[in-house]
Image 1 (cartoon, rainbow, N blue to C red):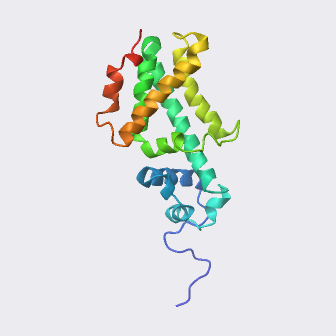
Image 2 (image 1 turned 120 degrees about the vertical axis):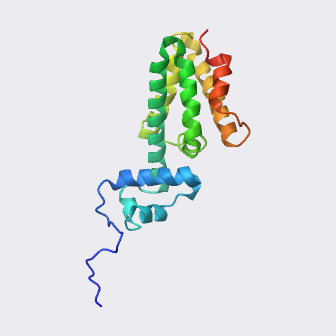
Image 3 (image 1 turned 180 degrees about the vertical axis):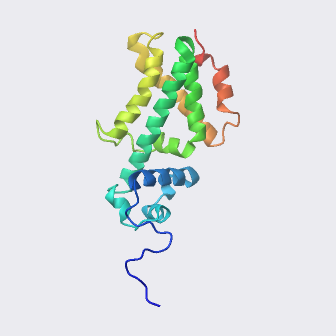
Length: 195
């Protein structure tokens, strides 16, 4: 039996995939959620996307560029969650609502969260790039929530202290040191209640 060289292998979409960039980010996020960022490879991404092994390189120069895209998307979703929480919490409850949204995002997306906050991607991101912009935007949400009740010269410091406490809660839970739902701890914390 002769094989037609122009016929694609069964189940293989070839390069003309539609929005391959978006598909690769989605598959990468799935792999990261399942096994962590260290387990993600371009070979497995190409296989799961049904494209040739070189195809991902048409959209991402290397693995780090893909991880930056995933992390940027994570920060955009994180900022959106904080913004929605602040709006729902109103002036007096915005900070508490954001704290609840923060820990909920961390618990639901722990491997993505680790990539966002426990990797060198953000500190090494280029100034003004998409990743740095998305990370700063997320932090700005907390600063904005503090601005009505905190002296201007203390907003940055207070935001960093709150961020560090929430980050610590998420990481302690992820590493098995806290077993309670983090929302319970936020609810009893005096830090996130209106004064």
